[in-house]
Image (cartoon, rainbow, N blue to C red; front, top):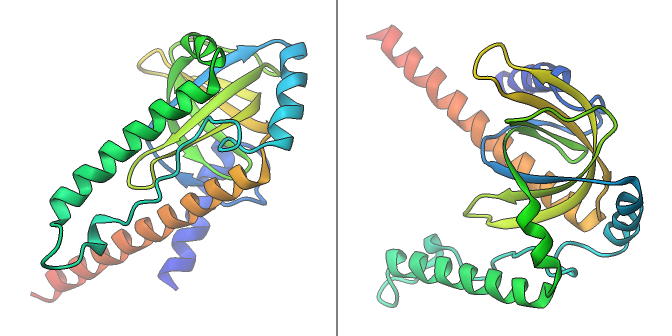
Length: 215
């Protein structure tokens, strides 16, 4: 019951602020996102490329395959050491991916930095220091933080831009104009995982409040 109410509140509050398509569940998150405005001609090229090949196939993402630290076998490698090895492996994979991408990496220098507010399989809401126009096309690089530790690169289109009352930042709602289905599934899996974590946190808070009320 509490989980259902929590899910409805999340969908209502963030659905209004984010992209209009509510067929995808949204979740509040906070991590860096990178973006770069592109021309209509470049958007058309990216649209075809992103629809045909996933970020992994294009050498633009890293999905760690190493076992998690929680899976360390007692008496072999400690969880702390295994965690360090995982981070080193991810960094090496990112370097190899950068080399595989070749000249495209030079274009990455033009990417601007923003901060994600909420995310779904249909789009992203993020803040940035400068305003963009409705209808602009953006190359989006969504870097999901560890322990998942993967990146999704997609073509987005700006559907709304608002300015925050304080802080001088701009809030941009961007719909995925072209994203490979494999990349979309990666994002959806992360969104549902994050939803479960938030629901567990809420249950824990409610239980703590109940225990305090009884004492």
